[in-house]
Length: 179
Image (tube, rainbow, N blue to C red):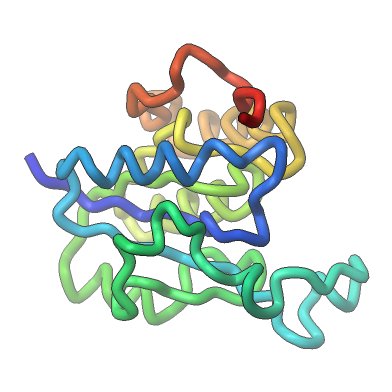
């Protein structure tokens, strides 16, 4: 059965020692062919954003930080990539896309489990679209504790049964050592 997949912020600016494994896993997930719709978000830290104003953080404002990771970029077409400023969750353009296509369920993976993945999954839930978070295809730039914290919050708010594994974790919970 074909399904819809939403890949959240798997972009170069969010790749570090805790997330480096996610682009390969997501590419493998796409290559299964189980998803008839593959959509992408990318975070863009705009000028005068809350991140700049309140946290003095101005990264991810332009290329190369805002580029999708090289492993998944070949799968993305312009009409399937939705830019979002900050932690806004689902941008209006993407919400319209979902409504026009009467999407009822969405598989979700990406970076950061405790921030953007969490916000998008909860937004989907609020839109009456069932989110299924693929836990082994998510990670947090802040490390395993932040990833697990995000999963704990999601478990409570969207239901533990909506946290599933894609079978791509290679037997590890934390990020494998970089090669």
